[in-house]
Length: 113
Ligand code: AMP
Ligand code: ZN
Image (cartoon, rainbow, N blue to C red):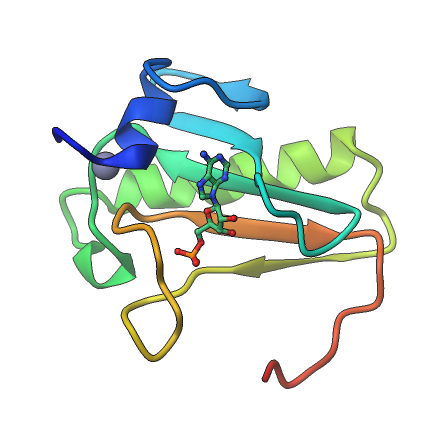
């Protein structure tokens, strides 16, 4: 997808602080961290938002969650972490490429504001 920031990050056209990569998934640290650990996990395939998850890409989305669990273990997030995906304007989605935030190493309020 042309002109998509996270497509360009996932393909290496735009640099990022890479944490993990395989054939389907890319993970990198958020540029504006909201917790001591804050990284994003994205599919390499362009999916515009969580509303675009469907039977054709659900395997990739499931794989993303197994990658998150593995990274959480590697990063020592044994005290817990939060996975967030924002969908659309009301949720504050600012990049139109599906991404899962992983936040950790501080106490996180619930419910979110
Ligand atoms: P959202 O607001 O849920 O769409 O999340 C988008 C996230 O992408 C925000 O937390 C931004 O800080 C982050 N972000 C934007 N540009 C970059 C970038 N070039 N590298 C890493 N993270 C970014
Ligand atoms: Zn994209």
